[in-house]
Length: 156
Image (tube, rainbow, N blue to C red; front, side, top):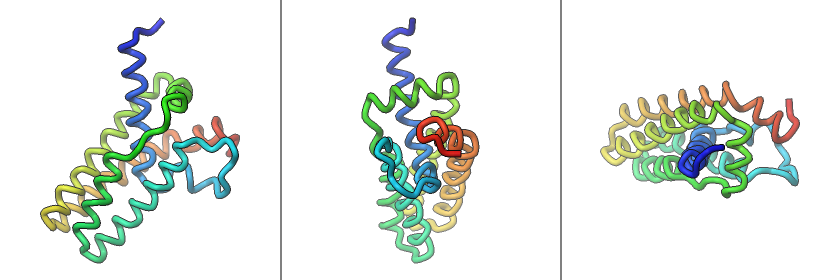
């Protein structure tokens, strides 16, 4: 039996992990075009993060540092799924939840670094931090995306 503290830690891990997966861009939303009736809130969060990530890329090209900073803040501090969904995800991830959370923390830290660099109009700093965020996202997607889609949506 897990303690309340352990349960809260797992829920936090899942919530943060969701942030990582979504902060990376397309994550789950890209492979499934239509929204099934059983779509998780996570899918919508991922779609928003994908839009923000794409907009950051465009903002970098345009050197629109205020926009880049704003979008990076949205990625670093995006909404999380409702508690019941977090528990479902946590249950699915099991012992992988901590690794998932670690990747999420990496993506959050990179998004925060993007924001700080953009606030300073430091283009090279923004680009370096954006690369780190994308690397964290890809690591998560490579490890969890396909199995997650299979488990929750039956998609190969």
